[in-house]
Structures are given as C-alpha cells and as structure tokens.
Image: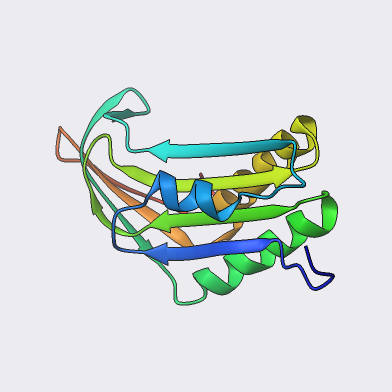
Amino acid sequence: MSENHDPIRLLAVRETPLSLDEVHAAVGDDAAGGTTLFVGTVRDHDGGKPVAALEYSAHPTAPRELRRIAEKVCADFPVRALAAVHRTGRLEIGDVAVIVAVSCPHRGEAFAASRRLIDDLKHEVPIWKHQVFADGEEEWVGAGSC
C-alpha cells in the first residue's frame, strides 16, 4: 500500500442494479482483518401495511453528501477500504436498494464503521423513498426520517 492510499474505493448513486460482487471486490485489502457488508433490500411491508411499489429518487447533491459521510467514517475509524452504493428508480420487492462495505484491521472496527456508514447515509444523504401501499395510500420517506 502506498502512503497516498485512499480508503474510499467505490461510491455511487445509480439507477442500475447493484452488485454484491462489485462492492465486496472494492473493499478487498490485505491489511484488513475484518470486512463487513450490509445489504438493504426492498421488503413487502412497512409499518404493518403491505407495500405494492417503491421508487427511490435522489437530489443532485446526493453523491457529494455520500462522499462527505464516507470521509467522516474514514476519519473516525481505521478504515482500510470503504464502499457504498444506493439504487434509484423503481424497485421490486426483494431488490437490493443499498450496499455498504467496510474493511478495517479488526472486526469490531469494521462493524462499528459499517454501522455508522449506513446510519449516516440513511439520515443525511438526500435520497427519498416513495412507497405505494396495497391499499392505494402513498408515503414519502427521506433523509432525516428513515
């Protein structure tokens, strides 16, 4: 590893399906003893109500905000490698909506850094979820209310 090692390996907000293999490969690091991978999928219910459809949209600043929180996680933990990708557009039940992965020297650090990364992403990155329930009701959920 060079001294100019950038631990942020992959950040994206995209309309195309997300790849576990791509994210896992991005955080490979010989100095890491622990790697965590979190996958968020579209579930068939929310708040006790059946979900019929779901669509994510992102503000144009979302990639910049994603980078900001990734840099903060790297500053607060001994991150060797980090990746985070979030899907936009229409998703079906079971589709992958978000993947985050972090590699650190030890497993405890990797778990803590990964938890911070997904929590901050959900609370601070301007990505909104539009849910349509089976009964026809609709709901918008976004950064700050997830």
